Length: 331
Image (cartoon, rainbow, N blue to C red; front, side, top):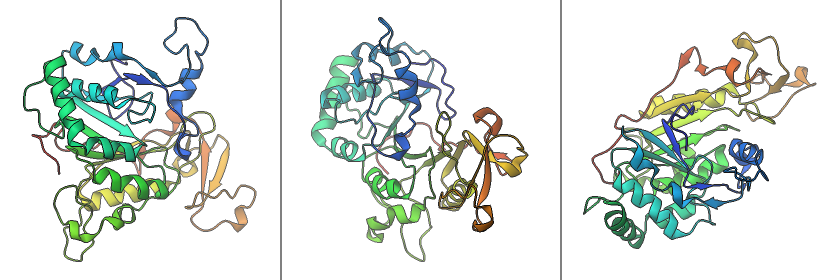
């Protein structure tokens, strides 16, 4: 647990589970794995077993020790819906969240299927209420979905968006968000929710309504975070990928946060040092073939996360959903 997180979109991290396994291309250069594996084999260290999946029940009571309300990123060092985590442990995590309504919890996953199945289950909701009231002192009659829990999915490219976004929108949640980091390709949110169909209208877990007279919102998505990859092996993010997400969010009235460029920044931002990667909007490298590159190819320089900064088109995009804690109920 970090009392004050450096992650731009949260205040604190809480890790009742650590460790994970790779699932999709966004996992290839996992920062959490890199950090944890440094300490493998060191007796007594919290990561003595590296990034092996580890339940940490002794950390379940940590949120009760925080005097002031805060935004809490749950399992920054794991995935709460990993198949190796028992349903009963996940329900305890949700019971703690139910018993600490002063905090706003941000739960991010790549395991969209298990998230949807568990959180759509009346039996699971009843178990959370029972444990929250009986074990942790939650108020009776806690609403479901929990009004202080935001659910999010990681979507690094269009393929993952098409898989995970519809599942998120079909999962009961007080607020829903997307983490498009590391952003490895262009993402069209309209396409990601196309399969949900216009018949869902503006109701429960509704999608973008594909109709000419619709208000053009992506109903059910409250927030989009975008950012490039940093660290060893980082892959560059084409500027148009980030701009497109920002523009889609602005058009639909969704909060947008640009987290970082990552290890690479556009050369035309004033960077004249650092290794160059020449990529087009599809993510294809044209190094050594600049004369053959399409017009949308850009020169990206590896300057490091700090030097690359967080400004997109001269502006820091730090929007959050308008309500940190909702009154309750699904949207």
